[in-house]
Image (cartoon, rainbow, N blue to C red; front, side):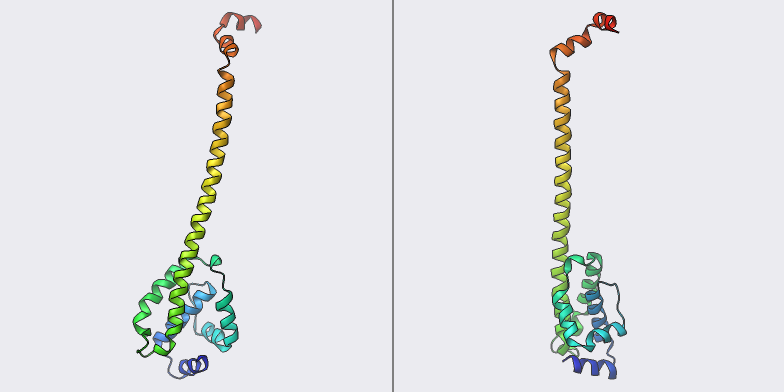
Length: 159
């Protein structure tokens, strides 16, 4: 299929297909855009493309870029219906759509987890501060100490 795709790209240069593949490759590279050279390099060897698709780490992607690609891919959906002109290459569109959904979900979970960890640390610090302040207050509530500060005459004699 990739050989046939490369032939089609070289001979007819279909704009919708090129836009889809550029978005697909940009997504794989975690870049905002990709050009025809990037597409050509990725589609040159199927084994490398498969390897990249299998080993891509979603947690290292930029969520803003993924969301931007997701919106672009969604706009292209009518061009990649199975019965349409680019139907035989709809697998690239389907993979990109599903991958974007997965990546956004995973990145949002990671963000929530990071925020939870940060908030847990903040709460622990505040609890430690409250305990420290409570201990300090209990020292100042000591009756002997309270009496000392109330007795101005004895305090003045000691100074």
